[in-house]
Length: 252
Image 1 (cartoon, rainbow, N blue to C red):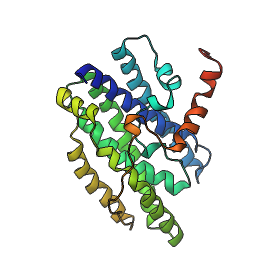
Image 2 (image 1 turned 135 degrees about the horizontal axis):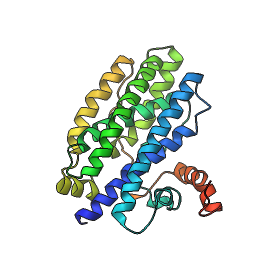
Image 3 (image 1 turned 135 degrees about the vertical axis):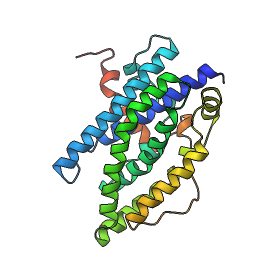
Image 4 (image 1 turned 90 degrees about the horizontal axis):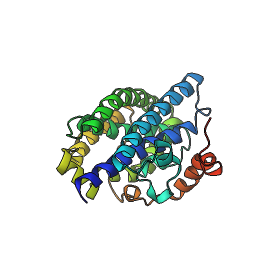
């Protein structure tokens, strides 16, 4: 894999992560426990989708085949998406959604900080804009995790189960493949091993405050970064892409 191929693949991966998490969050816009929280979730989802648009627009330029951001989002097959498995997991109950967001946002914020030091200037510029949004997301969602974990016996038990069940998807965040390694070597990309150390410290601090227990590492699921997804992903993609595929080229 040469530098140009790695850059395109890396940017697409960033776009896929943002789009898929934004889509998952859209699914629960009217299902959160408070009206104010539903509005916050909707705004957070739009933040992710906005980031996806920026990354996809850059990817389209890098690819040079005339595809648009909409085509990259709505006209690629399931196995062409390279998002991590963690964020495609079903929303479940409120605690599941919050746990997933905290685990991913803690990683994503560190990644965005590191990307600003990359020699891939355009990527760094998008990362700088996204960092401000994700910093607030993490603070907001961490407060909810603490509220749930240090709340009633029921909320504590449920959100501990959420953390436990999602933990097996966190290892993939820090497993470097050819894309990660080439991007790091050619463009000064993130050191995932260093990010893992920082992430572990941050997540443990949040879990401690929430009186939750950090699970021990065991089996870690992977494959999303190579286009191998869980059974949940196909259903979500089919719903997300339905209108564009039913009416190709449609516009408002």
